[in-house]
Image (cartoon, rainbow, N blue to C red):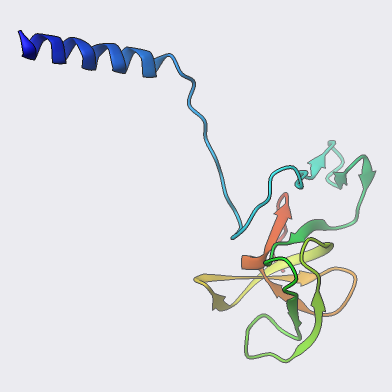
Length: 133
């Protein structure tokens, strides 16, 4: 009797869980914050549109811990000199993606669009695809 009761309970639990919709979560950065991200949309022109305005390059938000700036380097790697720093939460244009030294296992770096320098993709949440250099 106990076996039948247990089996019926398991079947009822599986049936109940089957009626709950599945939720998929994708994470592309170390510390994404909800409500702060908008994806770049292409309206057939091939030019990204962010918040209703056309931009020439992909956009990305710096996702370092609060108060910790992201180093901008002269090339795609930690061996290159630091030439600037970006504030956590700030959004910048990204010209292209390249490979360089790994940062927490991530070998990708973004070349900034409107200033010289590269930043590790580990600390930037890109809004849409960034082309290769």
